[in-house]
Image (cartoon, rainbow, N blue to C red; front, side):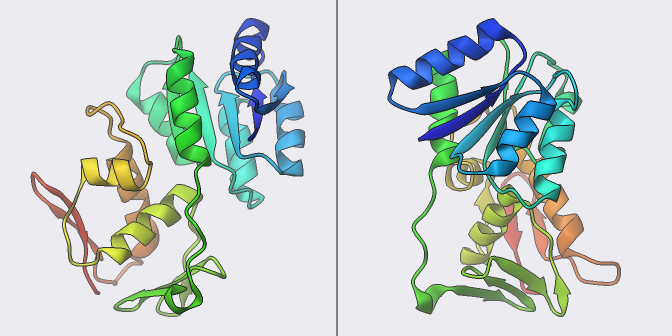
Length: 225
């Protein structure tokens, strides 16, 4: 696989690159936000690792710029900031996962493998999902609610697709972490709640009936509007 690592700390960058290259992966390094954004926009990466604190555009700005440009490459954000709100900010910007510093290479590797893994393309007969007025075209990668187009980030897309495939069924946070993120997160993380909240804001326009229902003490369920 091919990875881009955007990290201004040379020791950390070399540590990541050495470990990945020893496993046969191709790694490109960028030492600041400007260089990292330039390489990321060129595409061709299976996943991107970026530090949050970078010279030039910081990691948050880099992620936002990539998502605004339509780059769907999975992004793992590294952060030495322990506050929950700082980690949530990275997820809100469009990062798919975060990893706190210091970290073990084994965990970094596991998270990258999970992010880079992609499901096989669906057969033509199953290329569209419908739940009430909600529609997902899996081949064209478009989602609409009625006549309104939904602008979804990669993780939001996977989350909505999973909920639509299991419409009417309660999905626990653990189930969503395993099926959408393909990784067993720290059970205290609120990454699921953050993404569900963000998805709700995009699904439900003023005056529309909410489609994602919270089942107290259990999880979430997608109901036809």
